[in-house]
Length: 340
Image (cartoon, rainbow, N blue to C red):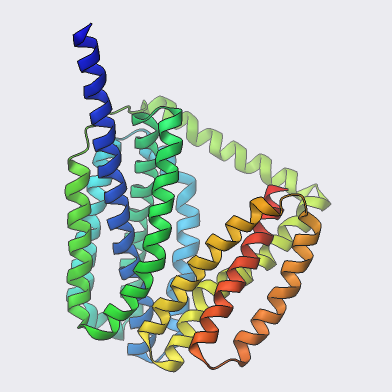
């Protein structure tokens, strides 16, 4: 009896240790991503004097990661999750080190920087899919839900504070120091991951090939269904237009404004304000769930006024407020549409 109790206590302690290690690793990894992403878009736009260089990199990266998402999951399933997380970190450290060494060349040839960014995107996708799969194996259903809740809270906090800190950091330390700090975050995250106690559950290659066939079949079925449904076509067009705004305002406009004011700190604060807006928007969703149609109309109308205000306002503090409110209402709108 005592042996069983000791075994249960041991497993409980392992669970807590794994949870703390993984949340810490995810938080530090997320901080590294924020520093890397913010520095690259700021560096390419300010150092080259060409704002569109940052736009090209952001747009290509978003599209590339969307394509990767179709295949990374099945790839991770047939490999060791912990090993994939370790490899992704080591690869990111190598890529960022090369990026730092070749930074002077990257500023003259943006295509080289784009290659590094896309390679790091592969690492990010591998890491995120691997830790999601790993945690679903380690924890039972209730523990997994709690873990996801805790990790999401930590990621939001890191996004708010991390972006502002990263912007200030970029503006006040040398470029190579930023690269070194970023590499250190990945090293610490890597160390934490190696401490996780995890028994691998690897899917067979045969089953993985079946998954790839299923993905292909699902894509074909989805395309055919959408093509023959006027409602779905209209819905997708609407979502496309909304996501253009949702993509431009959070991703591109902060870089554009910060480039004009020549302030990386402002870029970080604008990025932080958007996360605050997202959090407020998510909170409103649960309160307004019964008013889908009204929420959509009011949100779209208010977004028009906010975007106009962003265009005319020059005061950076008022800009931050506008970004918070824009993300609040766009979040309420899009999430309610998808939920409906």
